[in-house]
Image 1 (cartoon, protein in one colour):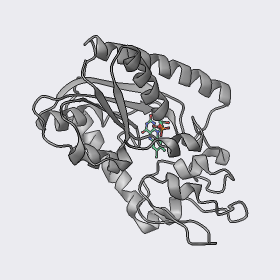
Image 2 (image 1 turned 30 degrees about the vertical axis):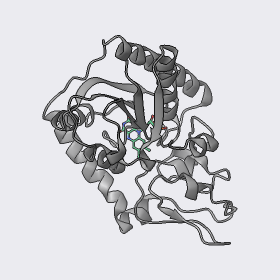
Image 3 (image 1 turned 135 degrees about the horizontal axis):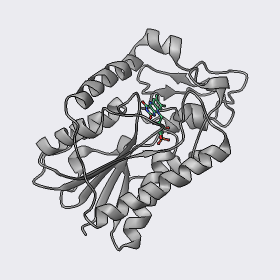
Image 4 (image 1 turned 180 degrees about the vertical axis):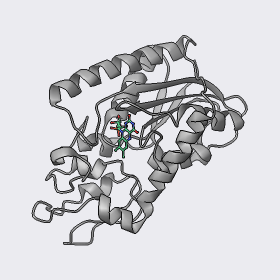
Length: 264
Ligand SMILES: Cc1cc2nc3c(=O)[nH]c(=O)nc-3n(C[C@H](O)[C@H](O)[C@H](O)COP(=O)(O)O)c2cc1C
């Protein structure tokens, strides 16, 4: 099999774990894999001689606008193989079909799509044991899926109309994140008693939406996509998400796992 360039985004680590597991399986089978963070990748620089993988979390039945932007600006191809994987807490609907249409129109060959259940990172955060079991099960699915891609048994089907409608709804909902009023009511209120101005949130934000001036508190701008990295990885728990029951947070890995992956 050709080399794989695996482009991924992960807010709180679930997708990162799945992508790492799939990479391990590919590499055990002699396939070279290059990981790329979507938020640092330029679609114009994609090598169409390689197989393309795309991994991301589900958000509001679809995925984050900046992930869609990346996909929509992929270069036209002449049959390049492409596969996708997303992670979710339970329900999607607006991704697999619309994404397949986009990549087909661009000239790619869709070879596989898989949605893998992992622990929820929003609303109701479950306890550690349940999360661990969900992660274990999810990673087994990821392993199976990678093997199916290698053995050419993976598939990428399409449920028309319904998934397009869901996608439209989701994009509408997620675009609200850019509106000031919405941010004020639903987003994060920094807890200044807890925040020690370390700036980790600034480095983690995929849309560079958090700014910090010397000696001051970090400030969220208007381009938040709700990935929850800042909430989940704040070492002082100073950026609570209003949606999360009892202010609990979830992360599948440590913050440094995100900071250490650099695009080559
Ligand atoms: C803003 C937001 C919206 C979400 N919407 C959904 C959803 O519609 N359906 C679902 O099953 N999970 C949803 N989730 C849960 C995540 O998709 C799930 O926990 C995912 O595995 C997180 O991946 P990550 O850790 O790589 O960011 C949502 C999470 C967030 C933060």
